[in-house]
Length: 221
Image (tube, rainbow, N blue to C red; front, side, top):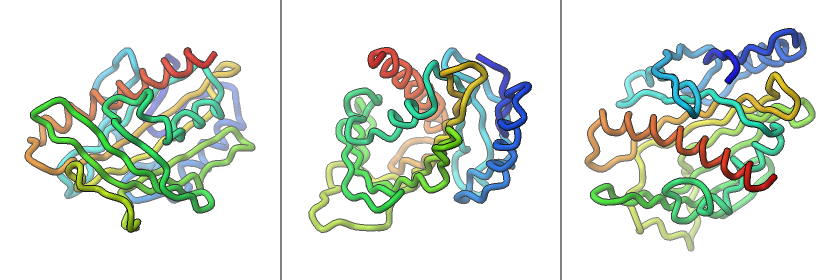
């Protein structure tokens, strides 16, 4: 894996990449994920470097993994937004489907299934691609629990998380047809799960998602 920092990726010798990175840092995004946020390294894993940052007065830290993929940014973006097929490759996803599209925004139903004694989680998220710049091979996908309701959507099959939001930031890597990415999540799953366990589960889950994407990329070659 190439050398990376949580506030950007070192892409030596590529002035254009540095300019794009600066623009990204200055770009306003949703609360809790600004590029100037303080991230502390936690551990290096096979899947990538794990970072945490304080979520202010919220219960658990943000968790981010910084990693690389042997594929173009456009291909990685297509996989991380392939919501209708998440159940085929994303861990613990029992069902996922797009309920509504509106420009650069989508509303997605998720049903996560966990082995006992952890109860299933069922929720609706709003995903936005507004900050992406495909002509520059830069993608920034954010999501949050949706306030919007749909009359025929049943969310009674599990517990709704108290908080679930995050983002993917995807850009060209150092080598041709490679991608450098950061995947950040803040989750308060609700129910009776102790804080220390939520942190461990989130650390493990971001690694599992990265590995699932690697397997999907390898399968589709």
